Length: 136
Image (cartoon, rainbow, N blue to C red):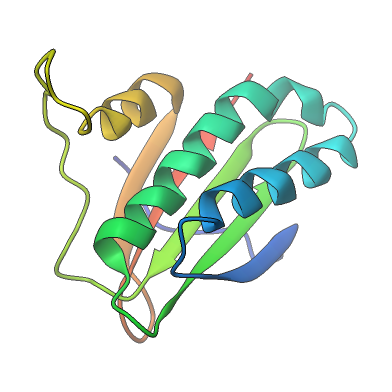
């Protein structure tokens, strides 16, 4: 894991509700952003999986009722950065090994495998930011 310094001018920043539908909306937003970015197609497969995992974790574990999740996407020719901001600083991501029978618990293992860099840091104000960077 590394620093939490994000780009000063994100390509997309939006708020998503605490909803089962938010991971799908995050995937759609990422797909549109990458379609509008020269060379963006290089990041689609890993980006879709990672944005879905981070938003799902934020909705399920990091966002109390009545709060929203902030999604920040930044892409250039070198890398895609995904940030998910939520309201619970005390509940950081936990990398654990899931057994063959577990129905969940593999998401952060995928994050570690697919991302060149990833991390978690305090958010200005309330909560935390979980971020990943993907490079082709």
